[in-house]
Image (cartoon, rainbow, N blue to C red; front, side, top):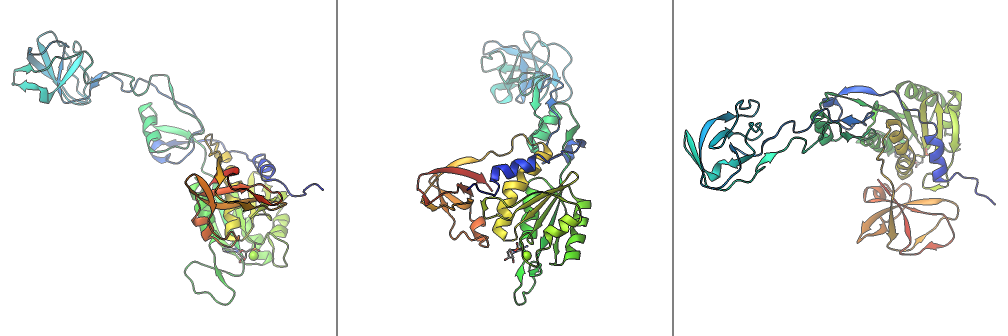
Length: 393
Ligand code: AMP
Ligand code: MG
């Protein structure tokens, strides 16, 4: 009998099919850290733009040791010497100052007997010594940053060197988190009978921020049909991506699916051949992506990493999104006959070992983990040494 549940890959393909990136926006470079480039960046000129000195010292013509040279001026950073350096002449020069015409080397201060009008060179000087050539960093016309790159601090500096003050970037996805459940209490508050602390609101918002989103809204929602509808309507108005946790199964107090249907959010799939994370729901309202993640804290995080994270990356046009690696199991692992399992593993000596009990409520199994090992469904055990996909967390 064929398996009625969607595979992880098929579920992800259905999600990526619905991603509609928004038009890029121009951002001042100072505002672009962590944003994804929507343009290629080309250097407008050579960087450095001129031949300059790498040292404080004297600009000279290359030649033998023991020469006496007449000091004819100074080249400072930002204020070049305008004359020409001839044989028997030298110009005092600072680090970063332009090399004067006629000079082809710099002798550092320490190697020179320094008089006020004359210097004596202790060393022979070869051409190009202590000179930074134009274009050693960036060549005029070269593509120095590529579309789809998430910008780090050095990238912003490279864009500045390339001549730009603003960059076209993908708009930051706005993401809303709705944590459903009557049992949920805010962090730090005392718990009454049957109550638990709401960790999903915090972990899901943190995952979203780490992936580059602006968290437009993050709140708890009681298990009540009208309250669930109102909260989803609020989230749809505020966000490009709505992430719900809990309430997506078929219990009498699971209001998420009927509320989504009532608001016209179109279901694309419900349930994936995944453990933990089987009840995952996905749908769309216009261009807004809506995820109903299971409430168990590990399930919520695993399904965010597997499904929401790639959707965010696609929304932003990320080109270098992390590709899963491979890892060998350090010990045999039981397989689920019908569902692929995401086992939280730590890596020791290049091998993957489960981080203790793997229940979907055991959130410490996630915080101790280096990654998720994907153990394909099947009969019996997967042997120690078997190679599996490793997903970064
Ligand atoms: P549900 O998917 O609503 O049936 O919830 C499944 C399990 O996850 C239950 O044990 C819930 O108490 C728990 N759970 C649901 N939401 C959260 C949350 N925001 N933080 C921590 N645990 C939760
Ligand atoms: Mg619930």
